[in-house]
Image 1 (cartoon, rainbow over the protein chains, first blue to last red):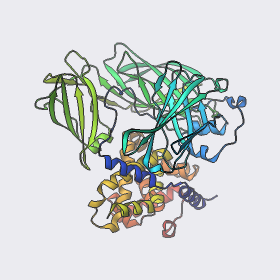
Image 2: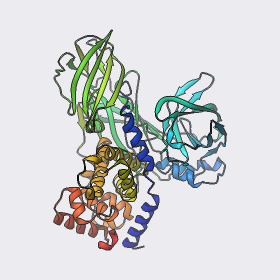
Image 3: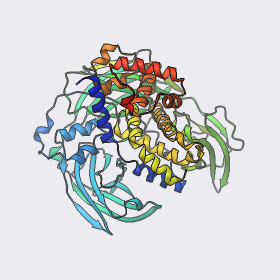
Image 4: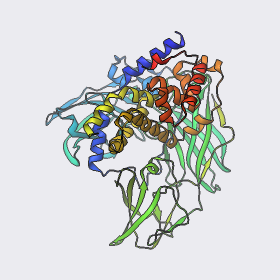
Length: 421
Length: 156
């Protein structure tokens, strides 16, 4: 095929792939109509960031023990965004479910599961005569402790498509409940109907993780860390780091990717989860990525091309009466403080572009003893260019303290490369 | 333009907008995220568009801005921008889609808009805020690197 034929084939493929934007329009209309929505979590979720990774290799015919399942077009389409899941489906690493329930004119059918030791993907179909009037909230309940797990709703919400929810767990159990709440899209707090599906995961079909011990010291902007090990699962890969206790800065985010000998890369996070913090540190020391579990190669490289760090000593005082601060954050301006009982309700006017941009805006506030003051927060539409972020702080003090997300954006002259066998 | 007219125009542009988004973002899911955001921003501000005949380029510009906002947010823009330019032979050995991804950003923008988003040279220049002559020369350079021989008929 010459280049021009290749161009025509690519154009044709993209045209066939192009979805209707009606779902995007419906979402946009709902979002604008409500004019009030959470832009981002405002408290305590600094442990979760966005990161990108790449490919790995490995040569393990795990699928041999798994049942042969006819690959359905809709499942292939649903996992197309993820190299890991795409490879899992191609290797028949899929469990069938098939449970179906109908309530109040809504039918939900759980069709497939893709499971490894730490991640569960549920693929389900929802049928209703009024798809435009509902939204869905998936969750997972573990028994017998009835624990709720946050679930990423990865569906594009296109009518009739296979929908997709994913959850990270410490250890995937054999029995759990998948819950789907169907909500009124005009009143997000109004639950119309709830479905509970008892799931039985065939744990004998879960492919074991592969571990690669790294123990490689790495210096990021003068701060010392150790790349400890990789755990490679069918649906994701986990990179663990350790930090030196003498470091003067926390690691906010590591920028890295994996690359095979032939230069092939996978670039994605894993089900929306990119990295995770630990209880006893402000650093993010665990990173997630797409997995090359089903790909074959003799070795691969871990390439570290940057990091963001935060100086441990930086605390920025903010005067809640005047809004004065030593440091300004582009796009953010103090709007005022109102005292309600024992709380301060503090508002900032935020340029919408800044919300989606790369910013060091801290989200969290502290008193002079270092105690976190945040109790709640929300971001509200103001006009086409601005939002109002409001924080409910557990204090009536005049001065509070902020910790920026990062103080140092580090990039080496040449990327750091580690070969992994 | 009413909201209904906006919805019709956006849906009519869906193929062009999708091609723009997926070639700049690289994956379907990221392209859809960007399109969701662009459709929302377009909905919020389409009434400010004084000349409806500029809708196609205006909407394409919003999609491009959202792509680059997202890429910046993900910190992927810096490594892409600073990647050394590949030689013609290296481009030749890659499938077209991968070769496109390897192009320097300015050349990729032009090729994406001209031959996948189906804009004219004048419209491309308008979206990118470049002189038409610059667009034409970048187009020639990119086509040469990709070893593509495309004329006006390919972007109709």
